[in-house]
Image 1 (tube, rainbow, N blue to C red):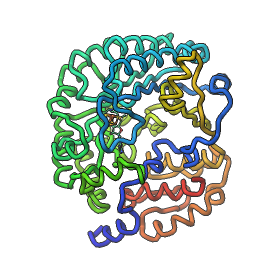
Image 2 (cartoon, rainbow, N blue to C red; image 1 turned 60 degrees about the horizontal axis):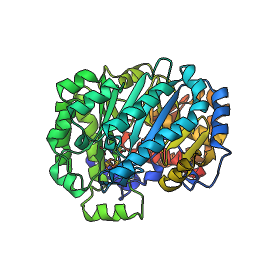
Image 3 (cartoon, helix red, strand yellow; image 1 turned 90 degrees about the horizontal axis):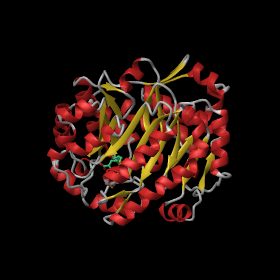
Image 4 (cartoon, protein in one colour; image 1 turned 120 degrees about the vertical axis):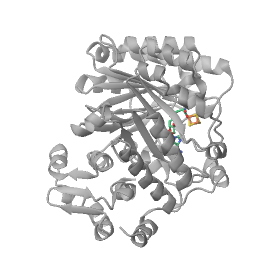
Length: 453
Ligand SMILES: C[S@@+](CC[C@H](N)C(=O)[O-])C[C@H]1O[C@@H](n2cnc3c(N)ncnc32)[C@H](O)[C@@H]1O
Ligand code: SF4
């Protein structure tokens, strides 16, 4: 495609501002979910009923809500905290929540269905060693009898050293996901993240690599002061360290929030053309460097489970990101943690009410909704597009008992412009995002989310 044609497409389809984080489809949720206006019946009852009926494996997600300092771009559910006593209290309450959930979860654990544990945040690395050990022990006991197949921890490289990573390994952790975001000092300074390159390199040292079958790296594309040239240098560092997985998250913001305004002042933020150029550079550099693209924003080395899942077409995406092999439901523990059980999307209480409930010895309330059949159909289409850039129409029709062209007629009409520009093609048995259309996959997905938002 010549550069004038590309500029025209960018002007037409890519917004000037970074994407709205509520539209990022890490897991599909209609926008009304974000307003939390539907309260399900007792979470425990819902969970128990669901676990009785469902047979799919379960992941336990445990949310640690604190970080030592907040990065300016962050849209995660995280609060800055330098008070050890508060961290200790959260660690204690997480154990209490697990104790209260244990009778409900135990049958799934005993049946070997809890096969994944994911400790995220915020920054789980803020936990002191003893706090981490107790949590890891309790989680592994819940995943009895075989223990979890995967035990992942989100690691802030500034908070760990080799001995701590050895300790995690000894407690059963077998996957790390490391927040790096960028390697350029100017970019990191702009977003308030002081991070020595040596700290990142230490996590990818031969000794640590020998302990973990998979270490992933998170980057963000679209940060203030990033340019195509700085991004090329960052990607060179990535290739040198060769993480098993790389997630290149497009920067997203919550429009109108203070952080979005502050970030813009730290700018300049790369505009639409630079963002598209950086994304193309990412694909060219990483795929050229031996990575397999495992979804629109993820890459993995060929030996990694995710790359294998691409080869066997068994790649799934839930709120923990891409998962290889089989679909997992996710039970979220901790303040604001999300739960995804079949059609249920529920959210735990935020930190204040969550703490109060657990101090009072009861499980916090959960809020959320039951996705309709229509929502589930849209979720499936979006997942297929983000993972494979194509929708297998007969497969989708079989799974949902609908006729694709009738059920999503308005959405397909909304894609007419993309089709005329050669970005998507609906022919015969599949809807395909063309090579030319790949940089525009998010706006294409929005066509399928809009109607129910
Ligand atoms: C909860 S953080 C875990 C890592 C750890 N707290 C750290 O920062 O090192 C998960 C990841 O979310 C991503 N993230 C946070 N805010 C984002 C935003 N506004 N846009 C895109 N990605 C974001 C970052 O890549 C971050 O590493
Ligand atoms: S990116 Fe990580 S360390 Fe920074 S505020 Fe978000 S969760 Fe905390």
